[in-house]
Every structure is written in C-alpha cells, then in structure tokens.
Image (cartoon, helix red, strand yellow):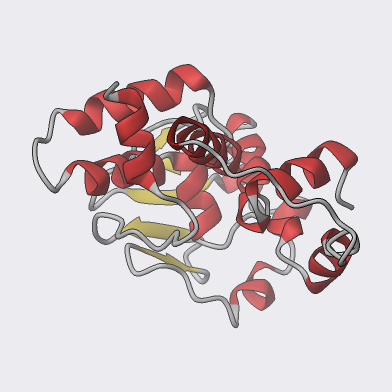
Length: 201
C-alpha cells in the first residue's frame, strides 16, 4: 500500500522514486487532477531543477543529505567525463542496493532492513551496514541461519523470471551472488549531471 507521504513524493518527483509508484494504478490516480481546469505547474529555475534531481536521488536510494554529498565528493576526484559515471558507481555499489538489484528484496527500503538485520555475508564477513561498498569480484551470500527466514521463502520461484542488471548475478542453488562488473547507468529518470552541477556551485 502506498502511504500518503510517498504518494506526494511520487507526484512531486516522479514514479521512478519508489517501486510502488511504478504502476498503472498510480498513473491513473496521479492524473485525475490533470484535466483542462487544472492549474499549470510553474516553470522551475535551474536551481530548482537541480534541487528536484537531488531529492530524486536521495529518496530513490534512501540516503541522507550527508551521504549524497560524500558520494559527490568521491566522484569529483575523477576529473573529466567520468565524474557522473563514478557518481553512479558509488550509489549502485551500496550493499543494500546490490541486494535489491539481485532481486532478493522488493524495494531498496526492504533490502536496507534485510542488511541491517544481518542476513548477508560479504566475502565471509557478516555485514550489517547498508552503505557498505562492494567491489568487483565480491561474493554476497545469504547467511546460513537466514535461509529459512520467511523473507527468502519461494526465492527460486520469485527469481525465475527476474533479469538482474549485468553487473551482478545470483545463483539461487548456492544462495549467493557475485559482483561481476562496475555498474553502468540504467536509471534514465535520474540526471546525475544536474546534481553534480548543484554541488559544484
């Protein structure tokens, strides 16, 4: 069920922010007030547009303002055209996001809770920090004691038709996944360059 705060955020920032907004029902509901008599939204300034993009990233990945700022700083060390790519890598390499991308959780919020509760092991070490940065070659396993948990029930059936991004894989027979490559930008509704411009002021 989509709560009112989330509904308002999706109306303001777009359906890509939360998975539950990406449904025909949300589109139909959000378009009810878009008739001939509806007031037109005011055109945003460049600064306002940058703020909106910043909020999109924060809500999409469930990160704080400070975390976002730190990711931008790390990405900005890479000079030239690679800054946006590096920024995206920082966001996507979070353990909670990787768990989500592997199809093990229905949303990033759920994956964040799963990591915090200690359900995953990275390279034989239990990790409970959602922002933990994974690297190419890392092995992400479901902890032995967690495999019987309800949240992983029917996992094989759930993953049968799931296509994960190319940078991760998950072997349901071994209950473990692997980081195959650096993430490539697949979030077309996010404008990372606008956010980089905001922080470069």
